[in-house]
Image: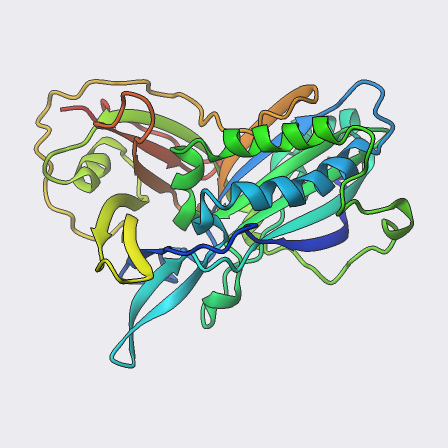
Length: 366
C-alpha cells in the first residue's frame, strides 16, 4: 500500500543577499566536457534538520525564518560564493566554458507549512523517506541556457501543525564543498542564536504574520530531480600523488561521475575577479583518467562515516538527514580537507541510487 505523503504549502519566498557588498569577487572555474550529461544543472547537496521546542504551539518556525533572513545575510559576507551564480565564461566574445562567480545575487529563503504534526511527518519518513523529505527542501534546476538567473542555494523553513519545524538546505553540487569542509554552518548558527537571544521580546523584522500565511503560492513546482536521491557515504584519505580521480574510480567499484574540487589561484593584484579558491573538474563515468600510483597497499580511514553537517540551533534537536539529489547512476565528490590538522587529506563523498550495491575496494590512502 502506497504511503500518503501530503504536500508542503509555500507561504512566502524571499531573497537574501550579504549585508555588505563583496569587493573581491571570487570565481571558480568548471572543467567539464558535457555539462548537461554531468548533471551540473540538477545535482544538489541536501541537508534537513528537525526541531521541536517544548511549549511551541506552531509559531516558533515562523520566528526562526524571520531571524534567518537577518542571520544569513550576515553569514554570507564570510562565504559570498554561496549566493553567487553560474554563468557561461566568454573569451574574446565567445563562450568557452562555465564558471561560478560570487556576485551577491542572493539565495532564496522559502517559508512553508506542512498539513500534519511533526510526529506524523516522521512516521511518513519511516515509510517513504524519499517522497516525504522532498517536501522539506526546495530546489529549481539551474537554467541550462541562462544559468546566471538561477540561485545556487535555497533554504526552506517548514512549519508543522501543533509546533515543530525543519530547516532544509539545497545547494548546487558546484558549491557543496563550502558546506562539507568549512565551518559556515556553525558560524551561521551562532549568529542566528545571538539574534534570537537579543530579541526575545521582539519579532524579527521579516516575520511573516498569520494573516499572510494562508496566501499559498502554488505556482512553484518542484523538479522531479528532487526524488532522485542517494544517501551519502564518506571516506577520508590522503591524496593520490598522481590523480585522485583514477584512485577513486579504482576503489569505488561502481559507475559514477566524479566531481574533483582542486585549489586554484590566479589573477592580478588589480583584478576585482579573483580566481582564488576552488576549481571543479568533472569526469564522466566513461572518461579515461589514467592510472593511480597507490599500488595495492590501500588502507581504510574513517570509512563509512556519515556526512555530519547540520545547523546547531538551540531549539530541541530531533534528527537530521543528508543526501545528494539527482544522483542518476552515482556520483563521487572529492573535496580537500581544510579544517583542523587534516589539510593533507581529502574527503570522498560517495552517493549511489537507492537500489545500487555499494562496493568499496580498500580505501584511498597511499
